[in-house]
Length: 202
Image 1 (cartoon, rainbow, N blue to C red):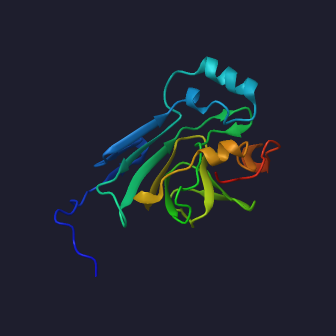
Image 2 (image 1 turned 135 degrees about the vertical axis):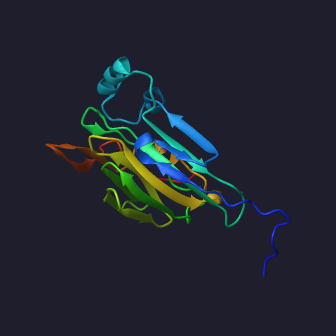
């Protein structure tokens, strides 16, 4: 039996306020602006056009709570992704595989309409809708990103092992994810990414 720490972390009350894009009680935040996402979208001309019209507000941001570190610790947070598109691709997060690849993650939909794009390094691909009241349980070893396919902000609550880490570069090295989430009339669909070169660890 493991011994208890001399000074355990204090419990934390969190209040996700999806429609305000914030989470009370957290201790971390990061933001991504359109200019940070160069190379993420296939249509470079559409990206440059969008950048010329950009108002300087974040495309997405994360507010999180990490009250302790080490084995067994959990990070809980709110992810908020604005609605929009670049060319025919919907706004999306950069996506990642956990650096400790066997670590899973849970996403719970709070507001908006989204898709979790999930790909294994072996080449399997799944696009799973996430809407208010729906959860997506992502096992370890899956590359994943959030895509906002709706007309309003997508807000999700997430939880993962704090020691998981994020490998964002695996997607960059692969030339993007294998599938793209694109507009299809009033809805969405996926289509193959012609620039995808396959995933590889370094």
